[in-house]
Amino acid sequence: MTTPSPASTVHRRHVYYVSGFDPNGPARYYKLYSDGAKQQAALGGADIAVGARTRVDAETMAWQVRYRPSQEAAPAVETSYVFPRWDAIVRAHWWHARWPEFRDLLATSWLYLRTGALWKLMRQSRSAFMTLFAPFLLLAVMLPGLAAVLAAGYGLARAMASDAPLAAPAGIAVGVALLAGTWACRARRHWHERWILRSYAFTGRMAHEGVPALDTRLDAMAAALVRQARRNEDDEILVVGHSSGTMMAATVLARAFQQDPELARRGPAIGLLTLGHCTPLLSNLPGAHRFRQELAVLAAQPGLCWVDFSDAMDDYGMHGVDPLAAAGVSAPRPNHPQMRSPGFGRLFAPGPRQVRRMPMHELHQQYLCANPAELAYDYFEITAGPMALGQRYRG
Image (cartoon, rainbow, N blue to C red; front, side, top):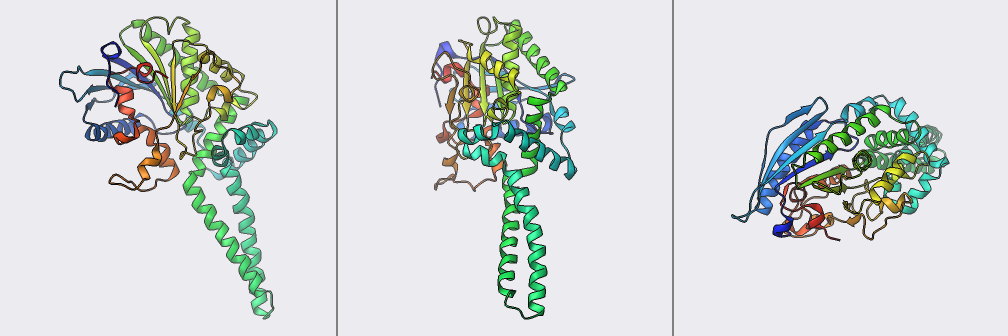
């Protein structure tokens, strides 16, 4: 871990964590953070105490984190970890019936196809392209596969009844169709297909129809951040976005800069941490004019430290894809944002700490969990430890 210098020590911090497209509220993320903090403390030696959840307002929860480094003389760091909710908006777009899912699948796939956004995505990240298009591929396999099983089964029964030579080919066809169906079922579990589909459709809706309730909520998050910065109580304000929450986090911070252009020039240091980002899903769409403008606002901030952690093993994120370059936004300074990898592959390498292979959805959550020191990625030290993001990652 990095040893802080006296000039870089953070005593007070505000973290604004923006979750991804998830119907779960703060209870789940509080448990994830508090359990992970205990595990990370056991691995890293620092003492991390997480307080109880408290209500900030009707749509915001928070908890206090006290981080005491392993060095006895080092002062403790106090962090307010704020969870601005938007899960009610997610639940409003979280279909349970199959027909709305099929409708959204066809409509959103056609949107990405006809606008050329899908081909941009394929050039930017093959793994993300496969994951995004997985629901369409599964539908393309499962529906014809079901028809093939029924037709081949009927043909096999007739061929066997008449002792015809077609019995063997029909049997092979049944076997192939069953294997395809088995693959499709396993792939659905691996990719968490229904979750991807809902998020995929929501992103398309953001760009081309708009979600007024979400815009209002993001404006309110930005205003709360500006008010906190103006109090000048913190050494750092850190905005964190995970998964599709990286789009929301970027928007919140950009709108905060628009509300107060002096935000980064006075008061606390401002940092943006994106985890498993998938911003091109939105920025590639022609209708996402405002989002691209917001990315341009972030690109123009000379005092902003933006660090992205996305892993090559994470098919939900876009490892190595610069969110500004993918949106056609030029950054006036090099290495902005910084593109880094947590190195999750080391978790599965042979050794005393080797862990089992994770389903993709579980691996995508690993950014928010405890990790061994050899990964050089410690979410809890970044969000609660004694160094600001800009000091920890100087480029």
